[in-house]
Length: 491
Ligand SMILES: Cc1cc2nc3c(=O)[nH]c(=O)nc-3n(C[C@H](O)[C@H](O)[C@H](O)COP(=O)(O)OP(=O)(O)OC[C@H]3O[C@@H](n4cnc5c(N)ncnc54)[C@H](O)[C@@H]3O)c2cc1C
Image (cartoon, rainbow, N blue to C red; front, side):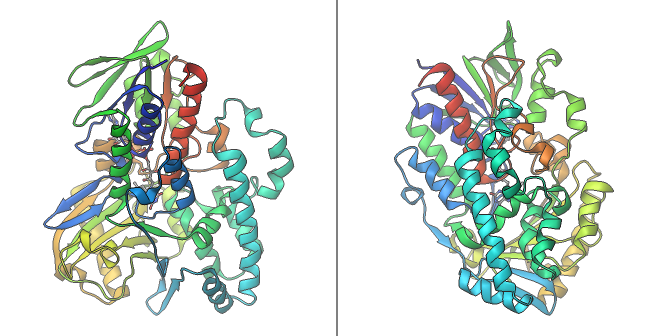
């Protein structure tokens, strides 16, 4: 039976849930506080430069394809994807630069150069990562965890030790590789996925399979091509969208969600689904008696990092950079400490630079460069225009030396985004960029649930829920919500 469904937020979670539920015949309306879809994946455009403000690594193309297949479509029906080769450039030092090739054979050669028997060791590591990936996709990702027994079931008991759920990434990688550069190459993704190697289950070694074997891709036009594709898919099935409208309250009567109140009006609904930050939804949109996860819950979590981001439109391309560039030249243990243990602005951070204009002529005027810098920083620390100005000068001067290019002399447009913007743009708890870290106690059953246990007809999708952070897996979160709604209310 068709239900009236309100979805709060149009990030990848909200968009994909809208597409799924509209295709199932429900009457779906998405309410988004910002002026465009995409959430963290929104775009900023100025003077002919176009920046994807959030996700820029298109990984797990198999999962994205599965999503479109659910609608009888393929990603190719909407946009072209290109495999990047090299996948990315890594700066270990000014004169120690490594390009991670797009083919596995060449990656093996590279590891042989980095460490004795490197290829042999990597092969073993990747066999393990492939196994972890395949078991996860088949048995653990597309699944709602309501009870602890859904997680520690027979399969997990049989496979748990082989999956290395209870090891951490740091000690796991050390078992394979002595060389620190090799270990950094296998673990850097964790920095950008909101975790520290010592605190992240070794199950996430599967990221190496995603990176090296499935490859790093780019959707032409930018990540926004994918945002537009899912929005148009949802609209085609009848979903409607309202932008510049902010939900202020979820209306609950007799323990059931029955609508929302926005800054413009009140809407009735049979089902409410929140894609907005989970902490914001619980603390600010629900009365305390209806909150399953109260303020005290969030205070005890490991909140994933925020970020310091600089979007610069440059009048010239930087020869020494590729599309994706990782700067792992500093002591990253110290960087993890100032993110998770002694929160402060990191003095010598690792960081990431994206220049999608190297691949895509549509994102910058001819011969010019879109340059986007991301430094992971702790959520909740003090942010101000003065701190940002000082910090950007410091980091840009560091980068200029490493890439041998006077970036600051070539800036045409510039914008910084950090903690305070995450709070104001997305209602993000403590200004986190990524939500909740992937520690063992914040994985699967231990992540906030897809359905409220305090309010009937209230559901959650997006990066705070299982499977977690990242564009492809938020699509899975929405599929789980779709399946719950099919089961509970029919198609
Ligand atoms: C800088 C950065 C880089 C990243 N890089 C990558 C990457 O390269 N690859 C990758 O796969 N992932 C990456 N990620 C992670 C990925 O972007 C996220 O996991 C994913 O986009 C989260 O989607 P979501 O739908 O859960 O949430 P969001 O995108 O945050 O969507 C939530 C939406 O809810 C809206 N909202 C909030 N409150 C309200 C309200 N009260 N009323 C109405 N609307 C509201 C927000 O405005 C927002 O649009 C990155 C993230 C960031 C921040």
